[in-house]
Amino acid sequence: MAILSYEHKFRVAYKDTDQMGVMHHSNYVVLYEKARTEWLRHMGITYAEIEQRGIMSPILEVHSKYIYPAFYDELLTVRVLLEEMPTARFTIHTEVYNPAGKLINKGYVVLGFISKESRRPCRIPTWFQEALEEYIAQNRLTEDNDKE
Image 1 (tube, helix red, strand yellow):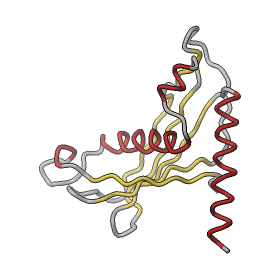
Image 2 (image 1 turned 45 degrees about the vertical axis):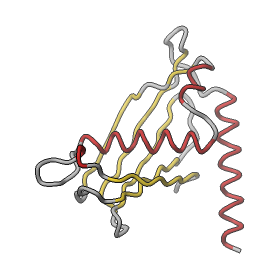
Image 3 (image 1 turned 90 degrees about the horizontal axis):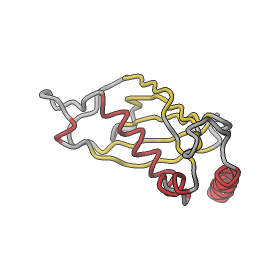
């Protein structure tokens, strides 16, 4: 069960399709990154800020399962899910839905935290963990208010 969920919309561009008008498989990983970046921005953090604070987040692993194709000009919903709080690794799950709401792709990305200076692994920075916990708490309050 996700402790956090964030959605962002992306339209399939012509340049991202093959001769059949189907979005090329490599673009799903790009969607994962775009949605992850927008989620962080929505949280009030950018990759530039993370790096300015001395932390880098290299990708350690990517998994993607293709279920159904996306087509040119479709407006896709990309959902980012956080299922557990990060420690030294940060696993972000992603689901991609077509305009009909059908799940067409799912996957996850595992990121690490490393010191920009030493290039050595480190744990999640305290400031990042606190920002994440605050964001989760605020979104739970919003969800609870929406249910009433």
